[in-house]
Each structure stands twice: as C-alpha cells, then as structure tokens.
Image (tube, rainbow, N blue to C red):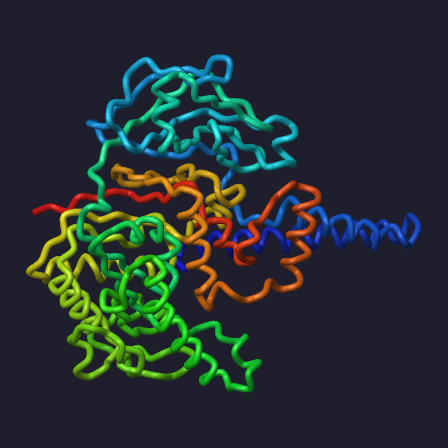
Length: 466
C-alpha cells in the first residue's frame, strides 16, 4: 500500500473514532434523561446506517471534479443531450474508445441510493451525492452514437445537457505480440483476461508467489509458515494453470517466485535478499520448476532486485512482446504493483528487445475501493483522478456476455478469490441490498467478481520512445 493511501486510511479511521466517541457521549446522555432502552436502540440504528450508507472507503468529496487531460491530437467533439438522446456536432470517424465528459449532480435520492447514468443498454454508477465532472465510457456503442439514437440519462442524478466526447483511435493491440506483467496470480485475469484470451501470441509473467495472509490455511492443521508456504505453492500454480482457460499454454507463462510485499524493499536495496515475511523462505527456485525458459535468478535463487530485473530482461528477450500490459504506476497504489512496473521499465532500459507500447491497468485505487462502481456486467467509467495524471491515451475493448462469463470462471479458479465472506461483510451486503439496492453477481462472493467482470476492460496507453 502506498504512503498516500496509508495516510488516507489513517485519517478515515481517526474520523470514525471521533464520530464513535461523540455517539457514545450522546447515548450516555440519553440514558440519563430518557428511557434506558432508547440508548441500545439508537446504537443499533446507528450501526445499521453506518453499514448501509457510510461503510464505503471514499477518500475525496463527491463534489470534487475528476481531473483528466487528453493529448492535443485527440478529437474533442461538442455534443448535447436532448430528449435523452446524445447528439454530436462532429463525426467520431474510426475511433474505438469513446469517453464522454459530463457534469453530474445527484438528486435528493442520489444521496441515499447509488446514482447512475443509463447509456443505451449500459449503466455506469457514481458516488452517492455526486456533484462534479465525470467521464463515461461509450466504447462499443459507436453505431447508435453515429446514428443519433444513443440514449443517455441519469437515475438519481441530473446531467447537464452540454457534453464533450473524446474520440480515441488505437491499433488493435490484440493483433500484436503481448506480454502481461502480473505482480500476483490473478492480476492478469482481473485486468486483462478478455484481452489476453483473444491474442494469438501472448506471454504472462507473474512476479510473486502470493504467499501472505494465509490464515485460512492454518485450519488444515498447519503452522503459520507452512500455511504461507502452501498458499504460495497454490497461487504459483494458479499463475501457470489458469491462463490455459484463456487459451494461453503453460509454456507461455513464467512464475518468478519473489515474495509478496517485498518488491519495494528489494528496489530500495537492490543487492540485498528479502525472504518471505510469513513463510521465511528465501529461495525463489521453490516455485520455478514448471517454467519453460531458464532465467538468471535460477542460478542462486536469491530474492533480490538485481535478479528480478535480470529475470524480466530475459523474459523480454525471449518472448519479444510489442506491447506490455502492466500496472499503472501513478494510479494503482499497491506497492508490489508500483514496483512491478518500475522493475519492468528498468528491464526495458537494459534489454536488447524494446517493446513499443505499455498498456497500463489499475486493479486498486488510492481513493475509492469500490471502483468500478455498480453491478457486474456493466461498463467501466473512468476512475476518480483528483490529482492530475499523465495525458496518456486510452483503450477500452469490449467483452460480450460469453467473454464475461469466461472471465468470471477464470477468477473462480484463483485460490485467493475463493474464500467465504466474513460474517460482518455478509451482514453489510444484506443491509446494502435491502436499503440501498446494491447487487452482487452469482459467480463469486469476492468483490472482484463485481468489479472486474464488466462490459469493458480499460487500459491507459503509453508509447515508449526509441
């Protein structure tokens, strides 16, 4: 987790403790001046309200504008919403990714129910109480948009009639040699299963074993170290086996075997070894037996930054990708994700093979743990960007219903996404279903089944020089 997100979480928890203290003082006063039973009743009502309406981790004001800039050569087409139809003043041409800048304002119900925008057969959800600039994803709806028949209207929110459409054109990256960088098993599937399952020549490089937070495996009678070791073996196996569901043979998958939440420390001390925090293991070769190519780190098995960069150099030179899919270093705050992309960039500098393009993804956010908001199966609006991001391009390929189901099944094979929800979270979901109208898919209980299985996948496009 990044320092920024740690600070945001600390502030959020401090505010909740202050609110709880004030509530306890109020309840104590009520117990003195009114009937004794009113205090526990109000405590129950307050807890239900918190779980239904105030449990989201939202670290910005719903009235903040999203801050996106586009390159000067991206067409910006003025438009207007009239009688619920989106009408444009220009032609979108052959653009494949369509982003509509709108101004949203929640109605009074939109402060208690999730406001969303209907876009033809799609919907895209936003924060309760939204009041600011947002960016809808219209990719895949070019025909209706060009014909002037695409309906766009808000539920529990109002849309200002004047809008701007950004029409981005990309090559079909599915037709190029592709490499996916996955910090952990399941990151490739969460971000890009729909993409990589359509690519003829694709490789997947997973950097870590994914062995931490293995408490559930202790129920098998294992101690903490053995439980972490088993989880690492299982997730390493996932990283090699699950891609076959998307048509990627094991020979095109590489597991590097480094340890979770150690990549940043490895980068800070490039020559030092960093063993697993939970298993204590310090030899990355323990999960490399099934790799189809030799790697520099096989020589000594040391979990160091130098070995990681060298392994990535060898992977680039062997698979020779034209496009690399990797975490967004500014948008995705997970420390392993940031370090993974930084290791990739260091490897590209040293490699004799130079990819042309990075496709950047975000499986986590600084500011909003629910993004993409709304039910599974619908589109992905652009995420919160309160601080300005680089003016990268965007590419948002569409997934049909069959591809979405295949992606959900790929996620269901991942051991880290299979666990049952804790009781507290089950109760929270029940209350949010009854009081807020939220829905979760039948494909799996983990939140990623809602967030990742969507009408779109979304990538930021960064061209590499030279």
